[in-house]
Length: 320
Image 1 (spheres, rainbow, N blue to C red):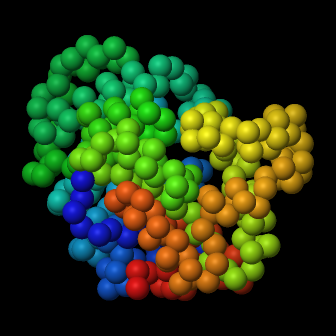
Image 2 (image 1 turned 60 degrees about the vertical axis):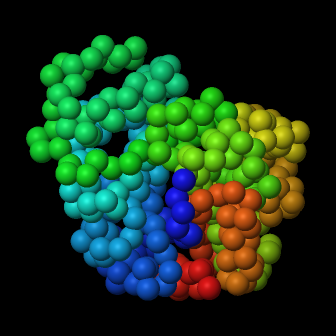
């Protein structure tokens, strides 16, 4: 587990072209940020923004949150990780995960089969490959014949695993160096920490909307919650965390195709638990609550309210 007080940010910014983000990325360490973690959905990939960030600043720890294990072959994933590790020696952590049925199957035409086993096998392969070993192995979900990185990174990157429920969190603790989770309230952190144990770094993306207009923040938060917590893995995660009952009306309306009804069914209290909002000072204090509850690395994802500049929000949310 990291002993450094960490404060991360999500890259790239959505509000401006990637080449125009150099100045704000370069300023992050002076603002107090220690980490920059990429996200990957349907825009920038997980690696290229970090490759640029590695050239723009030599201080941030960089991590993928996450690179999908179904949309990349194991060897390609190792190659991409080795490239980033060479650009940011000792500063890169490879975060991997299953992704979602929409991304894997609907968008990439790949069967999402035996995700737990595939994750376990990928972690074992990556640990060997990134250490420079020649890998020939028959894993349960794939086989590798004679692969060796050329060159292997002088300092292999640490591994992190996206993990929502107990079995996957325990896998992260056993085979990776960190567990990455998502859509937590501070009160949820102890349950995840209990599964991860004391020695596994716990990382979480925290959605932050710095605005003093609670109505605007809740409207934005409802749209995000409906988009994410109707995904089966996230629905099961929150069932485990005890939110099955308050989320059920939203999920039922969403499944019936009633998008407006789904949004209306999300109570204010749930939005306030899962989306940090308020004055930037209040937001910083709320993010610090995650750390006090046992989170090692909060990774802020700025959700700009109308009229809010994303780069200004990043400056305002920097640790005091």
